[in-house]
Image (cartoon, rainbow, N blue to C red; front, top):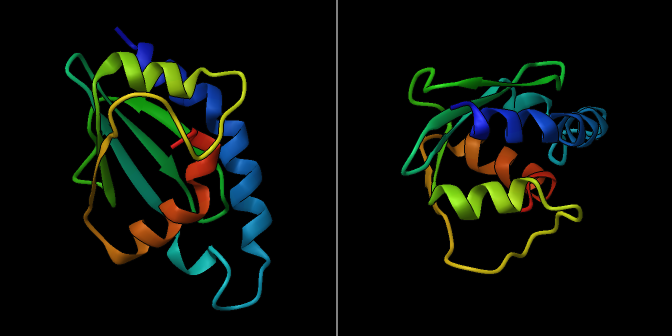
Length: 119
């Protein structure tokens, strides 16, 4: 397995770039107060966790590492297609993923960084 983890790992540099750019934004528009974050991606085939630390560094790991701040639930095919697209944007073709926000900070951070994922 590991296809989902690999796809998330490939977008980590984009997520880091966006996260680190938002760390220095003045209070209210920044990301610093919402980090660290863990986002769990669940498909019909596998699960992977994306972690963003307090410095904006992003890493991907297989499996679920705790509940996470958000759960993204979608079929494997659509999720991999979106994560590996050459051009990622906030729109995609196909059924929408199910987003389950477990923390308010998770929702805030996800809304700032979701474009890097193509979601």
